[in-house]
Image: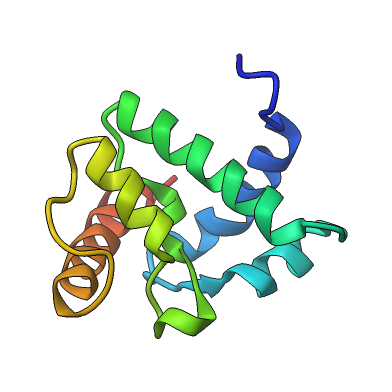
Length: 120
């Protein structure tokens, strides 16, 4: 396991996101951090590191990334640019990090998340 990982935080994130999966309900990073009690300083940074680790795990196990439900308030309801860069690194996205193509990819991921995780 990566020494920088926080399995307890990842568990809290999953517990918060799973009930949202079937409805394709997204949640802004800041709201998610508050909901699960991530305290400053650097709470969004710690949250996004955990979301990245979860995404890597989900993809490694052939699951759609539950982290797709966490979005950037400033990006208009899609995850931040780093999410799309990670998807590119994992071979799951070949488009831009912003704009219509990123939004369309996110919509497809939300459908996959709902189908896979919706009954979890």
